[in-house]
Length: 189
Length: 185
Length: 196
Image 1 (cartoon, rainbow over the protein chains, first blue to last red):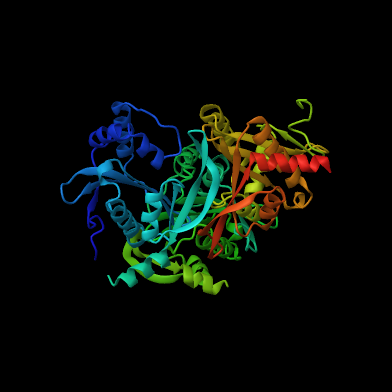
Image 2 (spheres, each protein chain N blue to C red; image 1 turned 90 degrees about the vertical axis):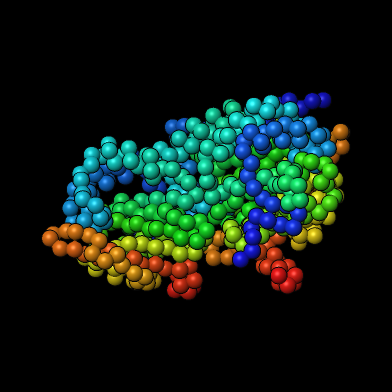
């Protein structure tokens, strides 16, 4: 059986609340990172508050509808980003939120590698029927990466987000289990 | 779409802790009923004690637990309870438990109808893949009823129960989604 | 001239109102025992609730409205007999983006196909666009909900997303449609209708 947590460039792990908070407090400063990742207003949270939030999450223990991963590079073991999954148990659908906080790792295939691990986990381990995500229309890099992973563009909610006086769409994408399986077979893995 | 709450003789209704704790206290005075339902030594609980348990356990409203009261279609009478509890989301398997507290409604198809409705709910609303139940070997009425809706014998815990001076097996029965859909298409 | 006179909460046959904690639980409890209604209204599994349980839900709801400040909830009554016939809400409001999600349901099958949905949605949209000043509203419906799809299209909603096989029910998978309506679209439609 394949290694669920090890890709070609990255590995999935879960860092301690303290480590996660220290990284998040840096990443949240980066406006470009925030505006690519989120639709809500940019916030500057204290490291303590972020740490408490992660500690609370850790205390709750295992919940079958929520999965959180930290992402480290294989080469230098650098902590570069995160991957979160929200699962609808009834309809077997997972939603993914993914981000690389360390800018130097953008546009180098790390995001695609992370997403491939995510898909593997969702379809081969969680046995979901569908994986969904949303992204901003101005996030061309992410769109290319997700298309490479087999996500189909399913539509766009028009002018949903407003920034710098301009309105932009949110793109909705999804990949079905059969589609992912077909991609796997095609690769000859 | 098929009605997922209304059957032929009964309907699945709300499991209200206040109402059910009173009903339980009444039904559990019947030792025959208790012995068919439960493996451990039976106690009598006041309706207040039942209520406390229910408010803690049964009203959790987690996506894995669903409890219903069973009411007759004819007179809207509360006759029992049925519930499912998902043990394993990756296997999509749940345990189901059924009890008809009103003994006048035994052996008349009410339990069978309630169980079939629960299976419809489990397979077409919660989208589970299999349902498991346990039943005591000295409860042939229930075993027949479960066989009628499609449950198959999967195993037994030998000599698990100790009652009336001898030991009895606990039977495990199960039904798969495909099997139930085929029987009810 | 600024129109401050047309009633936000009254239409020809309906009235929008707050929760009546004494009378409403019993009615809403009945809706939750109706398999058809629950499957049209909710993507979550149907869960029959007693009046007492609904009452507790109302308390949680009012607390949430107070704390989160991103939710507006209305009960729909028929004016003729003051009967509770449905509910409507605007939720998940993002104030900085000026958008929100709408939901609306008429509880009893006998009350549907009478134009009540149209009147209720009319009032809900006016509240969202002319009172909350939202830029856009969004709604999500399963592909099998023909009534809701027709109603949304009547008001000019555009189907923006098709979430393929996102819902499983009754032994098969269904698509979930996401519909959107912009304030300016609603405004020009309303103006056009007034001019007729």
